[in-house]
Image (cartoon, rainbow, N blue to C red; front, side, top):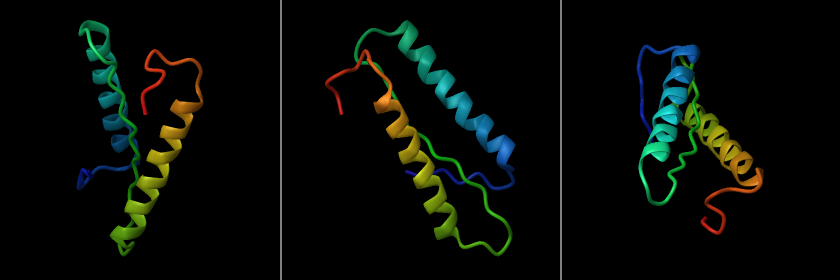
Amino acid sequence: FAALLPGLGALEAQEVRLRLHKYISLNNTYYQGPELHLSLGVATGQPGEALEDIQRQADDRMYAEKREYHQQAPHASAGRP
């Protein structure tokens, strides 16, 4: 899914991304059960830039984060997709 956050610049968008990761980590610290993980990609656009291009940048960054997560070894969630 996508979240559009009008009016946020690159720094504010990254802060939202970091906050979401913090909340997921907090959840994993205090709740039993499968560990949660979320890959996020953030992109901001300039006036006149096509939304599809911005979305593609965010997707590319999300997949890069996902690859980085899966390349780290070992995970507590080993064996899960």
